[in-house]
Image: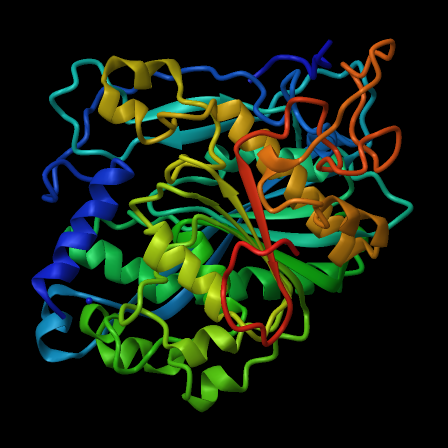
Length: 483
């Protein structure tokens, strides 16, 4: 039975074509032109996405802690921005950048106290012809807002970056789950649409410009909080080992944060004025000399930007040295699995890395399930769900492997590496043949009792439709050879 956490509350027309594909695929625009969203706001409730399903693998299950959440805001004056004139002149304007951060943490509250965290999700779409489609919806969490911090130990910091025009709330199935296991999770609200960007190109350029600086800002803010002797939250933050997690454009961001600087000859500088983004290119001293010693783990769900000639050179991807876990759908046509995501995995040769592939899945891997209002039209439904996989299953499997990776890299739990040391690249090739008289229906494969050739942490007959590829530093190419 599930626990009840309580109820409350770039250069060619081809580039422009790809921009349209990204936008339409994730439900940002209708027809790749800006349109107003509906004024009507119908708030919809979702189940607790952090709570695993009945068929969830072992490490998807909640940890021992109740979860608290606090919302912070940080303001940065005179930050470079892009404008319509900037695309013509190459000049930049400045603006005030405002970031929101949901900080999730182990909380000191009794088991009987009801959860009251409600997060906001948004469509931000041009689907104005869908009668009744709201602009926003509610997501019920398992956290208690502003709850007391569970003191007595320190917890590793994980910074989470959402996709284009998403919100932190749509990733709460992952963030709350991690917090229950003893992590401080800083989930950034990048506020991509703040101050009403004039065009889709303006908005997209802004996102390209800001994802990496935003993440670095939040890391710096959390480090400062940890040094504040008067902060109850700060005193439990362990900043000696920090993890980054990003989805889609957030995944693009965590790779840039970890060392993949822009290619000065690539697409990026055709989209963002060079004056604004030059200091994020791979050979610029301001970028090359950034301190990345705080990073110990990077997880990228469906990372965008990997196609050759768009964002990163091979050398730039090779500059990522932090251990890397990529999660991707084999049919991802937004980030382009064959030519984009796979290339990232192949070329990030400076890092020990893994790539978990959901066979036949597309782009949407880690969001909460579609709210009831999304079912008004298949287009809005497709911004959350997958045509092949159940949303809950995608999320649970992703949380399982993310937990294993972060526990290993941030907490030093060496035994968690066993969950990534799979006996077969394709899960369907694994075997577990229980004896006739034994009941294995509720047992997770643990490397014994006949499960030696099965994926650890999965129940019998449930490690299906997955691939896990592994490469060590300086390995040259992706192959289907067993690790």
